[in-house]
Length: 172
Image (cartoon, rainbow, N blue to C red; front, side, top):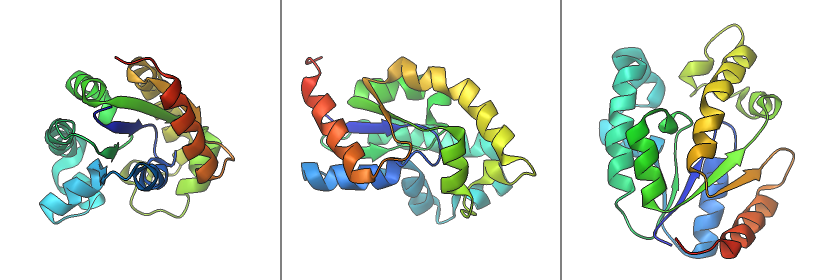
């Protein structure tokens, strides 16, 4: 296994699960959104405000291409990382891809107090999340080696399932 790459919608637990997996596997943990913030010196909402979603996606593409070239990391991606075909190709080629799936209801619960979600700054975040899921779910599934349900599950239980399911995969 080159890398372990976590994809899925906001609020699925990619960062939380990623940190735990990295600790369990004794690998470094990388978060593509945090890398963007480190490199720009600005947070994601500021980048969205100043450069728009397109500007953010350009930065995200560059970071994902670079991180997928690493060897032996656990990588958590932003929810929209799968939107570009080049990103999907890099993620799939970069290692084993785990889609952490969660319901819109769970996403709403997990992101309700998070002010760092530019796409949810709206009167109806539930509609936004449903619309995003309709577009992104097929893209997540397209590149996923395994799909893990995270709803109502403690992070450690999700980590155990990821590790068990990864061991059962044939080499590629």
